[in-house]
Length: 63
Image (tube, rainbow, N blue to C red; front, top):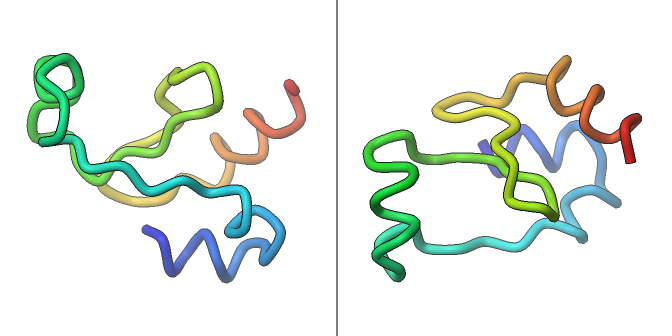
C-alpha cells in the first residue's frame, strides 16, 4: 500500500506516518487483521488491505 501511495502523490507520501498496529492494544482491537490500514489524521479508516484511490481522493477533498 505504501508503494501505491507513493505512486499516487510524492507529497502525500511525505505526509504519511507509518505505525505498527501491534504496538498498541487499542489499535490491535480496532484493526485486528485489517492491515495494512490507511487512516486520516483523525484516525478514521480510509481503506485496508489495498489502496482505494477513490476513497483516498474523497478523504483528501473532505479536508
